[in-house]
Image 1 (cartoon, rainbow, N blue to C red):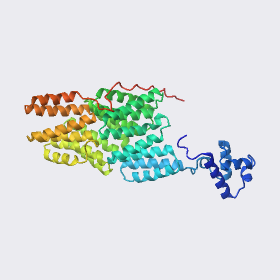
Image 2 (image 1 turned 45 degrees about the vertical axis):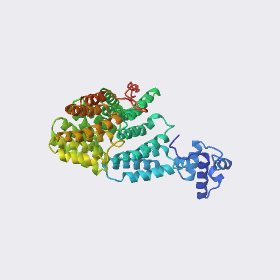
Image 3 (image 1 turned 60 degrees about the vertical axis):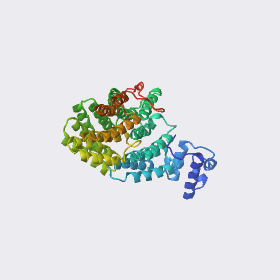
Length: 454
């Protein structure tokens, strides 16, 4: 089985011989009274695979553990490596900055010891690290490598890597393909009868965010409901908190702001208990959005600035830039249009096609509104058209419709009626891109076996 280390007969035999020689034992002394010298000789030559009973007997006489003799892994090392991985994830969540170095050391050890299962988990964590920095190419490579390592393992074990790849695709602006990847995985789990609650919750929590980006609000609500039904079966409180944050965003999209706030409080409570600062920053980000929708602009500004500063302190610059797009919107609404324009113009060098496409489009839309307010219609049109191009490429249907409406309204005011009609139509009709998918039938809902008690 993958992840059990080096246990081929030749390598086991070499370990037996090395330890026996170090202790100064003959093959007969090691073997008796339960086995023969000839049996030990056969094992040391790598010509036979010892039973678990034999290995446990030999390990005791050699003064080592069964695990170390069978796999070459020193006693307790796997546990220590897993503790190291937990510490690295804690550092990643708190933004203390040493996560990448620790993960690099862990990766080297898991490669040397041939610990496939732990190596894949380290690769996923390194992918998460790269996402925080906005290094989408490295993130994608890490997630794909983890997936390939687990190619022969049951699908639930590959879900974390698949989910990581989908998150990378989303941030790169490939929303349709990311959605396809997650929906296809949900269907595969159902077809194979592998309705693992933890894996399903991870998939639903991730896909509902994509549905919202794509304007599929009804399907986002369905995914949120399925995930909430699974939540009592999941024992990881952070996974459930991530779901609650996603549910909050879904409710906000439906205009149910008070309900959204309630779920956001649930998520924030867990992040505070676990001291996960990056996720706490995302809660401030979401609360800033809720305040904006209620017209509470000073409170929105404070929340968004807190989110930006926390993310930047944690090294999550890519997410900090995305927060600044919404902060610029608040500044503009508060009469600070030029400050907002300067902020947006500066960040467009770091956001764009394939790297934060949706937020780059939001920056262009807002710049279009600011320029239109100052009667610079040529610049406004350029920004609206840039936003439309980015959103169409990404497949963000809801935002695309809004950007097309803004462009159409500008063209209509300029008495360019035919172009205005074309812009309005573009917001309603969009062709699917080759190799991606539009939203077809929703994935089947996997049947989760009832939880056993007692």
